[in-house]
Length: 127
Image 1 (cartoon, one colour):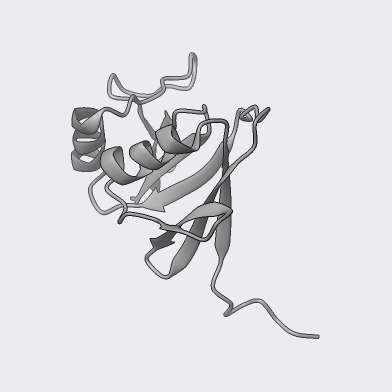
Image 2: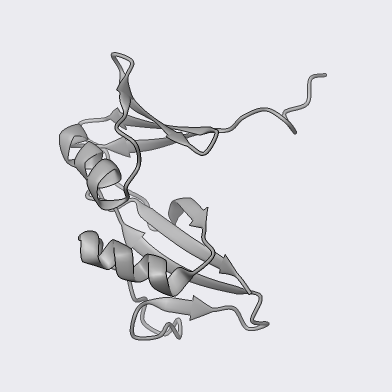
């Protein structure tokens, strides 16, 4: 059986409004302009592939679908907020006023934010 341990991952984001999603992922998140393969907007995520696909009746789930490991979560949150992203603060989770949560053992700091369709995205900084 073939192993996927070293295969390049592909992730999928669904959207009701592909132009709005492309504007968000390109302009707010700063991803390189996508390639349009005739079905999806295709982005390179540092060697992995992100496909943003239009689904007219899509409804986002409540949990993260894509995240990034970052070196400086505070600077990244500041840059994303300045670009138009809004961090999500969940009641009772214990995040700071910027939406950054610290794991109980201090090994990770995490922030969450939605894309235009409500897909939950995240940032993680290893402790």
